[in-house]
Length: 104
Image 1 (cartoon, rainbow, N blue to C red):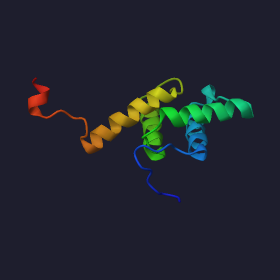
Image 2 (cartoon, helix red, strand yellow):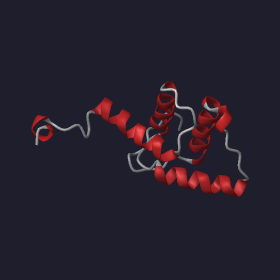
Image 3 (cartoon, rainbow, N blue to C red):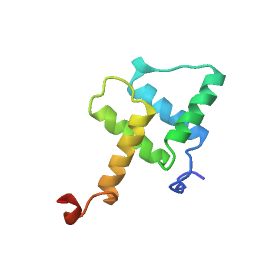
């Protein structure tokens, strides 16, 4: 369903991975990665595994955030995951230490 939220542990689907890669290609056209069908299937699977627990909108926000910083090259999927988690933390506060933890 369009707009449906994924449970935190689910994988982005194949169409979402393709869209995320298209976003990268648009923002970094000089880094466009075309591959044959077999390699594309492998790439989709790997992106799904690495982005586990990240929603497609979170991943896209991370990609746009990296582009807005002026990154010269398209980010690898692990960088996208790291940024998505950092953005989630800013929004939700999850993972932010409390005062006692911060000074420990």
